[in-house]
Image (tube, rainbow, N blue to C red):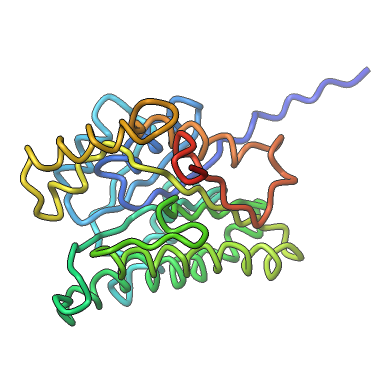
Length: 255
């Protein structure tokens, strides 16, 4: 009788937008699950707050839309962990405005961060992900699913619709390389994003209360609700899930 004495492999994960909200909760969930995690964001202070108390979480302050950022992120992960198993494209920015109020710089910033950056970061990670038969998780939005409109948030929604299309297309393109591509579409989650986008705190809290009344599950989401699903979608047991975008929104999108 032989005994396999090899050490178990420690999963390596990159999470963009890891300083706040869903990204921070996801990084902690992976770390608590035994993975090594590199979180990326523009604010080193918030990244360090996420990593506080979690020795498995490493931080990299970088703007993912910078031309050199994809290679920097992948190289940093490989230098720190020796491998890359999961890439979570989570970072996003929003800007509320109707069509006649859109400003070119805001549109470029939203599309650059929410759509263009994930394209080139995923491209840079392909060889590393192929080596581990890894998984790409694109964080979308339940608000952009189906035939719904999203007044005053059209550019953000447009980018998320496109990200869902990439999720499906990458699943087909990358399957021969052993890489899965899945998406998760959160509903309304209390991440503070409205305040960071310029909404007064009182107005944001009022929006959350009003929305909770419309959600069949009776509440808005928590970042941990979404993080749990992201971790599950990257497990070996989820290997047959590919090209799907999972809505986690308390059933709001089906009402």
